[in-house]
Amino acid sequence: MLDGLNNPGLHNVTVARFTIKNALYEGVVLLNTSDATVRDNHIQHNDTIPHTFGSGPACKGQPAYETDESGDCGGGLHLIGAVSSVISGNTIVDNADGILISDETRESRDNLITRNIVTDNPEECGIVLASHPPMGSVPPLFAPHYGVDYNTIGENVVARNGVKVGGAGAGIFSDGQGPGRVSRNVIIHNELTQNGIPGVALHTHVGPAFGAPADNMSENQIIGNFISGNGPDGDDTATAGTTGININSGGAAPRFVEPSFRRILFGTRMSPSRSIPRRKSTSMSTICLAARSGSTMCAPLTGLHAPAPSTRMRIFGDVTRVRTRMDAPRPVAPMSAPPHG
Image 1 (cartoon, rainbow, N blue to C red):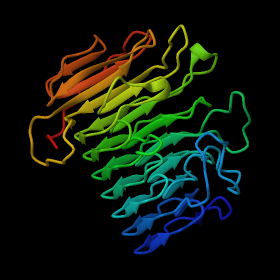
Image 2 (cartoon, rainbow, N blue to C red; image 1 turned 60 degrees about the vertical axis):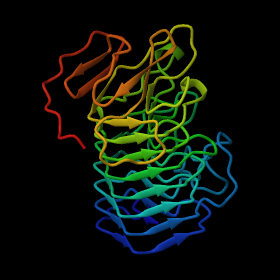
Image 3 (cartoon, rainbow, N blue to C red; image 1 turned 30 degrees about the horizontal axis):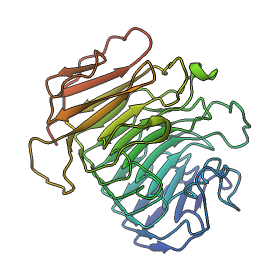
């Protein structure tokens, strides 16, 4: 554990080439650290204490800064209030979930998660960016969250996670105890396959329709990923069938009011195949967005060009810009698409 909460100013620490296994909770924790490097480790079979999703804020015995970990005890590798860390070349397997970035103690920002193998973590997601209640805040409406912002998730292999309870390949979540903030993150050039729920899932569960402030899930980007063979979403963000990407505000309130946010997808390929073809130019799966009425609309996404399920999905060449807003759209500055991944 790299503990900058009790050792203020902790920075420039490297954890490399260890086998880390059989911990009660997380295998590795970066807590309020900056410029740390975690590379080339084998992180396996952690989170061994019994745990049940939704049973409370934390697993039995976890410290007060773990405010929303009952389902996974923090996963294999947990960044809390981490800044400018590099997580690279690790193999993360057979934990409750893989990599979690959260914000209980301060903002987690500018971290790079790259070239990791995150597979067979059965209970929750492969890689998660999740906004959680600040340490010391109390319900019913928790204090504003610090935020999970400006992080890059790139060139990872993320497969067969969340098959037991239901977890995405890559998840962007606010916990429903907001107002949370998960913004300006980039998910780029990953292989997201055979996970329990969609390859990429963006969920926000509260907002004005529930008498609460809106979460801030703005300006996240999904770029050039390969997405294949993932399952349907469930609960209040359910989709009708297997889904590549689900962007959904959840909830079944009579009036469905989503927070203002913008999603941008560049060159992302999706396929129903359960294999991972690396050089196919055309593939097909489904993208789903929550409708204003509370229903979910899904449409096939073929290659880089897709029929728009509503006027809120607009196609610009090989750039799909997805808007889900209650108010009038703001002007978007021109953006050039990256090369096809």
